[in-house]
Image 1 (cartoon, one colour):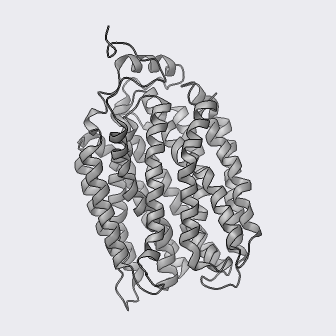
Image 2 (cartoon, rainbow, N blue to C red):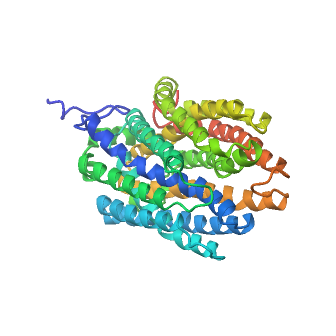
Length: 453
């Protein structure tokens, strides 16, 4: 019996021809997608709130409504993508829309008093393109392996490239000598070049998406089915006609992901305001962001090893608990505390690797366990829906609340509410997320000994 005829045990990858170069080529597309994510969720609120003069209430309302509409569309995009089965074409269309939206968002017309109209218009192709490209991209990667360890390798490589993309996006304005009062045409052009580079490399050299189902051996699927039947809903005999969140283990993973995502979205939305008004170190923003994301990239191999030793779910929970003392030090900082905040960025960045690599790996393995590969895009459509809903709630609720409490951007008056929203509430939510995951780990443990131990 040849090596390809041998059954594959649950939790181990089947024989594969995917080389490290091929997987690296797949991960390359994460770089431009991450370059787009940081401006969308971090730079745009500060650009339109500080430089364009939009009130925080109006800015929060625009971001909340557009992000909620975008999030609602993600499950539909995932459902349609599963039926079209044209991932390459859909990724190309998505990247084209993303480039168009980015160019519009970072080049508002000068002298106009209706900047919120322009922002809302620009966010339509920006969000739609990002959703279309990322959902098909994540679905593609989820089916390159069949074990939790294989999924962790794929997601770790992808997120490492993504973090370097975030570093590039955070330092580009400084490298291009953009002033605080100018719009950013050169920034959007540089991002367009990166989008083209990542898309061409991934689609040219990565394993074709059409191979994803061929990579799953029937023996592995049968073994996974034995493992999952006692926990799956009795109505899952025809998986393609059921809602992806019907499985208890998937719902448990989503519950932990929601609470943890809100905890991360709050500081992501407010970081530029905190650095500028509390620390008064606006010129060092690129350094802080680069240190945070570089630490996250360096931590990915560490969390991969920890996940192999103690299980992915437990490793993720450890990162949540450790992030609380790592980030809470920001509460003690004041104007000019550059070194102290740099330490906070590095320590909290070391926890970031687990947040990025382990949850998608857990989801990908649960999809394999329930042999729902035909619905992979639908699963990740709901995944991105939750991610964007977290960011929408963070911006749409925190910014108007801060204005109501008296905080004014670019002012050192009434910064106590900002300090509370940025430093205290994320730590509380991280603790809550760790508690939710503790309650759900038994469901994850039921599906594979590699998920938790």
